[in-house]
Length: 127
Image (cartoon, rainbow, N blue to C red; front, side):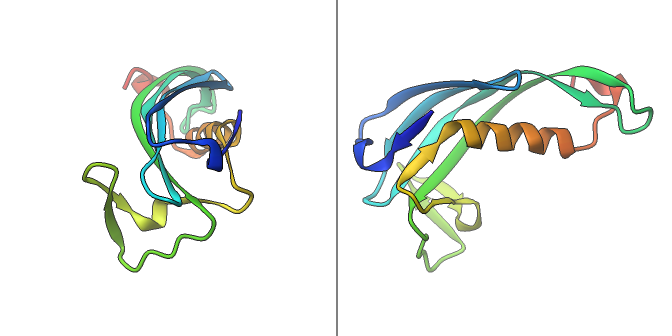
């Protein structure tokens, strides 16, 4: 799902995207002329490899997420910035969009790849 930034308003817009066994549900809204926040929950089951044995197993994922997007290169002067009702965001974590769109499928796919690249242990699969 690709969303054009110019069409996103200041009121929360519900989003729901599923990729690779994970689901991202939450709300997306404009907090500044060029900044957008997505606050929600990432949940689902992902097949990962055990770091010690190499055995594949399903790992349950449930976590709160907060993404900040910039329409173009972010020009913030500080390392951390309060945006969207006092939320503190590390400006190094802002996702910059150079085409004026937020690609939620690509974002979720990147999260799946990040989970795959982490170390997982089968005996700790429920944590």
